[in-house]
Image 1 (cartoon, rainbow, N blue to C red):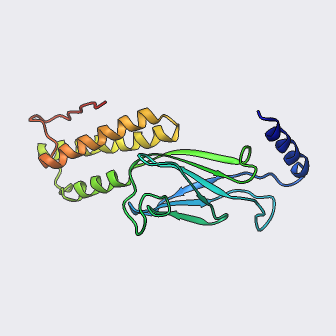
Image 2: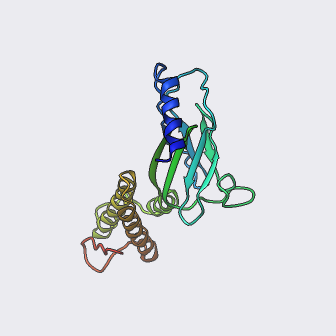
Image 3: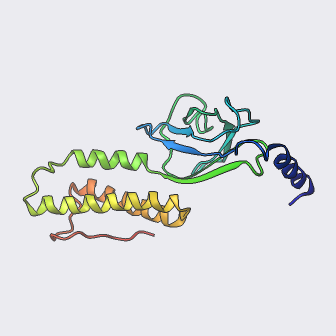
Length: 206
């Protein structure tokens, strides 16, 4: 550890060891839109209102450069493509994939919280559209049963991708996402996802 950083940490603990603990935390808040991400601050601060320096949010975006933006404490922070530097104006759908969020306050070397998440909003929107085109109340035919099995399998892969990312297993998260996406594309293309029999057929994509 650099000497300057070590001294800074010692001074920080000296001045604040008797205060209420600073516990940084945030939650991903659903916005039900492919164009926004919601980040809600749920941190515990020593002071009310919070007296912190340089609250910042670092966002690693799949397929784009990492950006650092100001973070509003004790609030819902809405992010869109312009705020994240993907577009110059307006709002475009944000890419699916593994995101890494890091919220920090000064000194950022010791005061931060980081979370890895799999964003699946575009895939979920496509899944929902396919689901709504089916008459799931008519589950008697073999074809309908096959469709339901296929949808259940895709949903399982989507949830698996989210769980893997939550546990920082990025490679596995991306594999599961790709499996769900290719199965869903095939399902939409054939209008049922069938393979000529009455059993679910799952292909693993790597």
